[in-house]
Image (cartoon, rainbow over all chains, first blue to last red; front, side, top):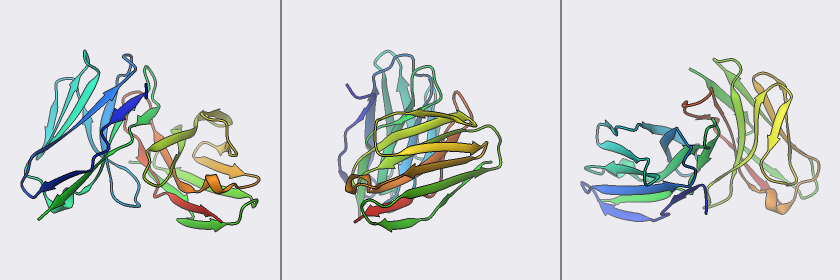
Length: 110
Length: 112
């Protein structure tokens, strides 16, 4: 089983849609979780950290379910500019080493 | 906040040639440093990480090596490149447990 697994997509949605991405991780000792955004041919950039209680940043909501070892990202009111690859990142159990999922591709169309 | 400088941005090298990619960090000290490779359409594969000067951990056996001669300098090298070494190489750093990673702008390497 891979350390971090994501559905690669692509998710093809119209502007204004709500879309949800899921991610599972294998090491129950992992403590730190993040979502990154990567634009084509660019480096990944932090979108948001994921906290145990769940957190929201504008149109973006992240949730963590430790019991199921599952992380989610919800994007509301999708914009054309949200088109990118979204990477789930889990710091390797008990350590500071970031482990990346393969990424989920989102395409928002007019 | 920390800034990572990585160069060159693009590189085309013949098979069998050597490689040296350099990464430097500004705005922090004693960072954890990482080299990742991303093949076309694939995820980020961790190649090496370092928690301090001269300390290198290798994740996968391969044609590459890494060195950390100074606290904020991380170098990726190869003596003889293979076609399979082509990819997008990313240097990253973080500061410890619970902290996010920051990336350099990456080097796109094509081995021909």
